[in-house]
Image (cartoon, rainbow, N blue to C red; front, side, top):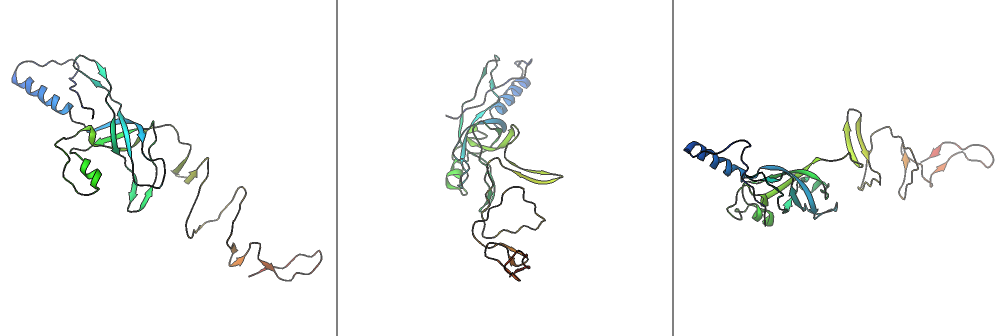
Length: 219
């Protein structure tokens, strides 16, 4: 069952019996039931970094409910909320949320359940409005320093991974003066410098048996 909002009166105010205050109380109660944007905690995630369609998260709203007597209670969990990914067509940055992330959720002003199912233009699934069941998780807002990251700064772009970096493509071109610190292993293929092969198959000209050095490599 989806959690609902609660009427949260302004501290130090009381509603009198005249029409103005009754109207004010009604308006406050009306808007207290409407969800707009709130901080949330990720409690479960359907995806874990795989190459897959965008998944869903289970969320816990972090701002608790306070009733007219000042009693504080937690909200219920929000299930099956889609999360935002940077994606255009079949191009994407895959960075799935993780359990424990604290982020921000927006709550759509109409029921989006039919759109989530059909992935196309659809009528609202019900008459609910600005309801927690129609949450969309937008990403983290409170987090520790990362251990794996791409960093953009005035010094340039830095790619850091404590595990490894895998680049897969039919071709790759680097236009730069390149420095390699560490061991370099090349498995298969041909390595060339200015069109001359420098792998284990290349030959040298002007070679004679003895202690002399060879000439320049030949193509």
